[in-house]
Amino acid sequence: MTLYARASGVLLLLGLVSALFAAQSQPPAAQMGGGVLLIDIEGGIGPATSDHVRRSLRRAEEEGARALVLRIDTPGGLDAATRDINREILAAAVPVIAWVAPAGARAASAGTYIVYASHVAAMAPATALGAATPVSLGGGMPGSQGRGERQQPGANAPGESKDGRERDAEGGPGPAARPPGSASERKAVNDSVAYLRSLADLRGRDAQFAEAAVREAATLTAREARARGVVEIVAADLDDLLAQADGREVALAGRSAVLAVAGQPVTELAPDWRVALLSVLTEPTVAYLLLLVGLYGLLFEGYSPGAVVPGVVGGISLLLGLYALQVLPVNYAGVALIVLGVGLMVAEMAAPSFGVLGIGGLIALLVGSVILFEDAPGFGVPGRLIVSIGLASGLAFMGALWLALRARRRPVVTGVEELLGHEAVATRDFSGRGRVRIRGETWQADCATPVREGQRVRVLALDGLVLRVAPVGGGTDPPLHGPSEAMP
Image (tube, rainbow, N blue to C red; front, side, top):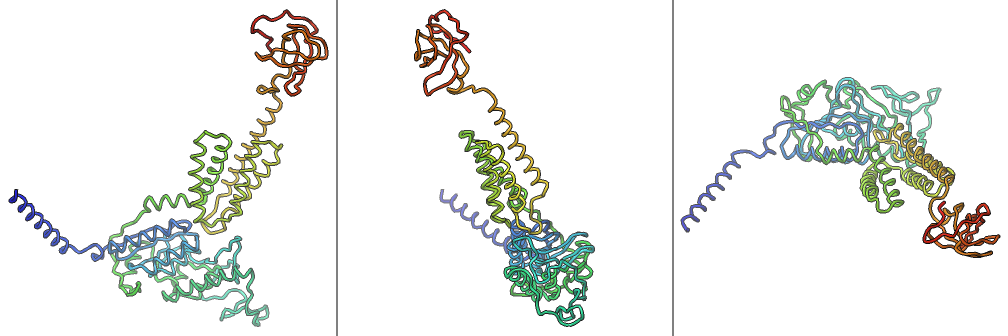
């Protein structure tokens, strides 16, 4: 037994030594320095995009990738998500190459900020960037210019001198500043200008265009951007991009590095399940539908306790919808109007008011849906979906109203009122107040004329627990024996 234990110990020691030598003979992945990673930034930039970039940078650092390429095609996105992405880029230990591609793509608004923050900026032919004016909470265009005009490279905006100061129609200097809009709008524009200019100074790119892109929503094509020093490379494909980027010196966090990416294998990173799920949940259309499903589900469960399914589906949908809303540019007045609209329509179904509550609820639902999301590029609910939801809700409301009106015209089939118009049989002779049998029950009855035992009478009205009756046809029926009685 002792010999076996010693042999096992020797084998274990030899295994550990072998593993140690193997680990030392093979350099870790972070030191191998091979390959280039590629990810796509498409559509509106939001929390899912930020998470995807952060995870991709972590993987690039762990694998010792020589660069991370961001292939950009975006109309813009959320300010918070964009700044999160830029913070990751500025602190990255791996060079980041921003490439506006493929042909026909754009890096508008938030995309321009990411291009300026990247270590190397590139564009494919027939692409554009710029239009980085922040959108105000009311959907307006805050800024001192805000015309949305395109600024040509090296040219001045109409009515502007070489130093950027406005001039009047006769060529004289105009007012030093004409800042329209509120103070909050001017603060937003000035903050964006300072942020983008700081990125331009850090990367040595055109700071004048950075300011024009914010204040005037100026844009540039790939050729113009290259001529003005906004980007360093114009490349039609990925191989050309890596070949032109090869040998360039970039400043990483705390050190400088020379890119050696020509001919390197490229690995495209697709979003993982977590990013994919977050992308779906934070899609404005999905968040909007989840909110409606949640509200309707909980309301239907409240009006039909024990149904279970509407409550479970509604609760889950509402929680997911609220999670999505907290990371989206939401106008909470729109949320309140949607909740009010759904509540009014359900109230109309429960207590019909001849359309007053239902029509008001439908109007509130439509208005809330229109203003639900702030006017951020890439984020919004399609108008056709809003119209479809409005039509569906309106049809449901009109259907419920029609059923309620039809039910009012039908005779009562339950309760005490159902006895009106039916026949009963007198259990004994009486004049004035007596007793009758109807539907297996004995009721007190009151009749203006004398009634004999077994005579059929018709129920005319109810006075509390007393039936107002009148003889049927004035005839006399034979007395009933046993439990039998008149049937309606």
